[in-house]
Image 1 (cartoon, rainbow, N blue to C red):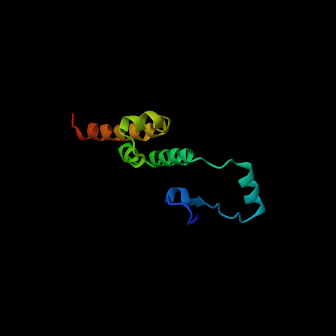
Image 2 (cartoon, rainbow, N blue to C red):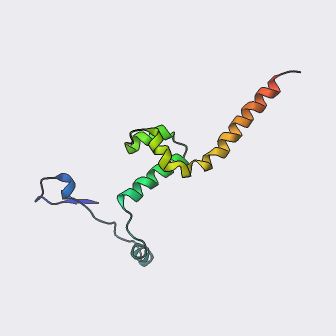
Image 3 (spheres, rainbow, N blue to C red):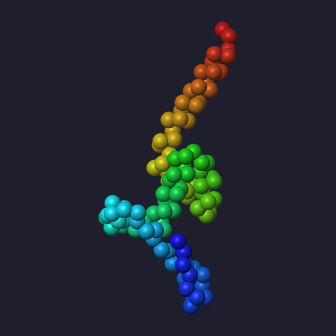
Length: 104
């Protein structure tokens, strides 16, 4: 939730993040035991989850404001190995389909 004070001219400086109120003692304990995520952590998680969901890396690169897809791929290549198995399966199915279409 954002609250704004009228004393500052810059809207970025005025905006203050107010944490959500915990709904139980368990939630309070979790909030105390985990450090607050930094903006960078949230940004990295956002990009990682998009790539894991199969969003094209070019779209992720543009969403992050990276100058090139190469920069994005260099930073998030650790996500890509999990995506290689479905790609290999797809090409195998395509090749087997073509091979079965040919008659001897």
